[in-house]
Length: 316
Ligand code: NAD
Image 1: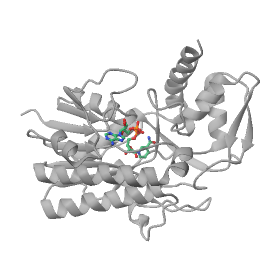
Image 2: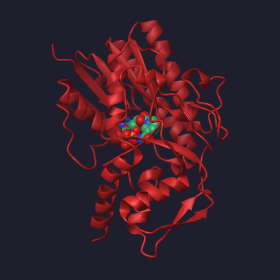
Image 3: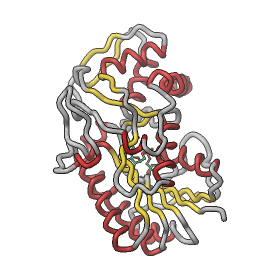
Image 4: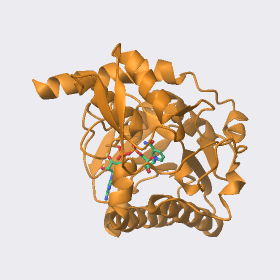
């Protein structure tokens, strides 16, 4: 029997790649989003444009005999957006998450996937040992985006207990790749740095902070693979998906510049950097056979040319 999935957020970066993967895996897929994907037409069998802040829209989006729901819709962006749009994130993403999980429970779906984030974790000191998924409590996320995700996780877990569906919750590390947001204020560090380096004429770029913040970045194909493995597994508790490769922002600038084949000098300027350090266990997702295929250099080799191409075509 063909499995039927609904992907909420199918017009976005990760959602659109996930739809492609589900179609490749033989699923019948309905994509739902407030907008169509920006770069290529959705490969979904059906695409519904709907505002999931409306309960009726969420109910309609999940009609028919749906086996799996992938909930990725969110009011979402990089650190600049997260710090400047707190109430927008709290209001919109919370409505979306509550409406979709309620509609899924009413529709009687079998499995419900939620895209959460490592923003649910507290800040860390440099050199601190890995945090496991359980270390999200006692909770101390650095920003409201993280608190909203934590609430959404708890909403999914409680609906699952009461309604008997299978919950799957992934905490994504920073994800990057072609067809991700690269301008407009919602872009994340790898895309923002790629754009700035592609645009730089004098060999300098402005970068927020002092370059010492530590992050890891997961390439889109690897992340989507992790999602599929998690959903197919019997792991019901939140699961980190990312890589074990950690770099400072200064090293990230160097890697993007190397990929671009440009000499770049960063000019450090004040800006919303977020937490100082990250270091998460990937043991749980790796126990499901997950192994990232792209290190940062390989992922940037796919991503930078795509962003440089966007910059070139927007300039001329
Ligand atoms: P994205 O912004 O590209 O995708 C989110 C999609 O949700 C967008 O297409 C947007 O139009 C849609 N959406 C927003 N409001 C909506 C509404 N009211 N009704 C219907 N659709 C609506 O972001 P992404 O990077 O693809 O992220 C997908 C999910 O993964 C999000 O939940 C995000 O919080 C989570 N996540 C992403 C990252 C990352 O690095 N990209 C990291 C951690 C967690």
